[in-house]
Each structure stands twice: as C-alpha cells, then as structure tokens.
Picture 1 (cartoon, rainbow, N blue to C red):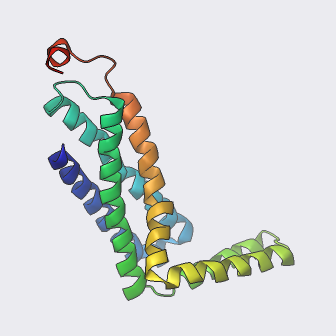
Picture 2 (spheres, rainbow, N blue to C red):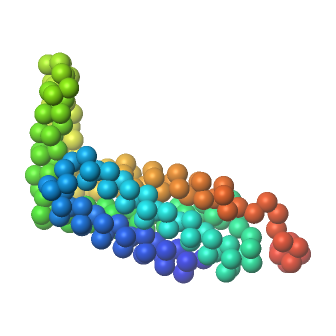
Length: 180
C-alpha cells in the first residue's frame, strides 16, 4: 500500500508542480480568472490520480477488494503528498518570483468590485480583508498552512470520499474472508 501511495502521490505532485509553474509563468497573459480556473482544474486533475491509486490497490493488492476505510486512507495520503508538492511550489513561486502577487490580486479584485458598482462599505471591507490576508501570506508558516488546508487539501478530501464510495467493495471475496 505504501508503494502505491508514494507512486501516485508523486505523480499527482508532479502534475501540480508542472501545471502550477506554467500557470505562474503565463498568468499575466491569460488573466486572473483563467489562471484561477486553470489552477483549480489542475488540482482536480492531479488529485484525480487518487481514483487510479485506489483502483491499483484494489486490483493488485486487494485481489479485487478494498474497503471504504482503506480506499479513503489511500486517497487521504495521496492528497497529503500532492498538497505538500502544491504548497511548496506555491511558496517557491511566491517568495522568489511573484512576491507582489497578492497585492496585484487585491488591485484586480477592487477594480472588479468597482466595475460592478460596489459600495464604499464593501470596498472598505475588502481593504480590511487585504490587511488580514497580507499578514497570513507574509509569514511562511501561516502562508504554508493557509494554502495547504484551503486550496488542494479540501479538493483531495472530496475526491477521496467520492473514490472510496465508488470503488469500495460490498463484500470480501470468499478467499479473503476465510483468511481474515
């Protein structure tokens, strides 16, 4: 099981790093909305590897059987590995190539709010949220924790749950039940 988790976790992490890096390189050309859509699509694609990790376990280790708990555990560990890769890539990009990205995103958000007719109170609330967010992103530890737990990890949890529900076996095969 550990080999499957490592293998698929690394595959998922590699997809994250490649796509995250490409998005970071081209975000100015494709714009905020598209780069965010590509980012979330990348997370879903890379964490979709969880399905194949559980399927590999079921077919190659479990002799056609996998419990919901085992399937979810495999998905969870692949999620942790992939989320680590994603978050480390974010930190490298954020601190080394795009340290102003959050300011630029704030400016974009305010312009978008103004264009949609936001009130002064809404703009003041956005400024307050920016200050709070900048404190998070200036500290590498809180930056890491925020990105890890609020970006890829929840998506991985959802994919792990769906995969565990889809691939779980209802009954143990007779040869496994007698040996258990």
